Image (cartoon, rainbow, N blue to C red):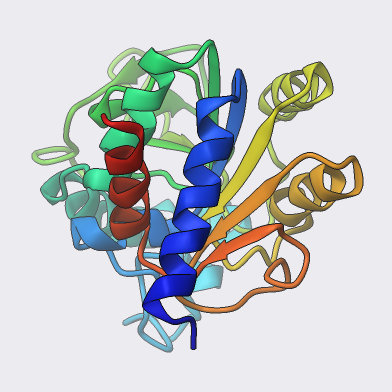
Length: 258
């Protein structure tokens, strides 16, 4: 286990890197929202942990594009539970620290797996939500779209007010492809270069989440992992902070005087 002295030395080193960085990438997963009260388990955004649903389906199946196409009521039942948890949560110190850094540094990008919207609620603007956002809704039949603060009061599944078609949130369900435009934007940002790359609160099991950190390390770009648990990236990164996201980011901001 890292001693307090070793942790402080790593925090000092990462803070020193931040002070001289112009462009910083933060790759975040469900763990960054743990201090907001959101669990880090399975499911869309890591917010469901029962072995099977009431319908006897694994949650990955209930939240899949295939089940949504046949039984949108089942998928929406669990999407609504997840949205309720997200709505009840508030950004924590890690979200606010990243938003603060976006105002302090010339270039900060957040590339997140989370659908909870907490990065934006904390004030981050340059955010790529690669799995989408539960509050962005679109009709599956026509071009109707809207953004809502809450799903409370909506019928499930919601129906389009213009054509009566089934409405879905603009999130990536299990078995569906990642949004091309979002991935292209991320790759363009990555090609433009970063001075420092963070992986925060993600198990990094998906290649599109782990690979940018590997690319950065291979290119000699300093890399940081913030995660209480070890991952496939733990032996690759230059700096590993085995802390919760809020504790680590608040400690870094304190060293930066912000």
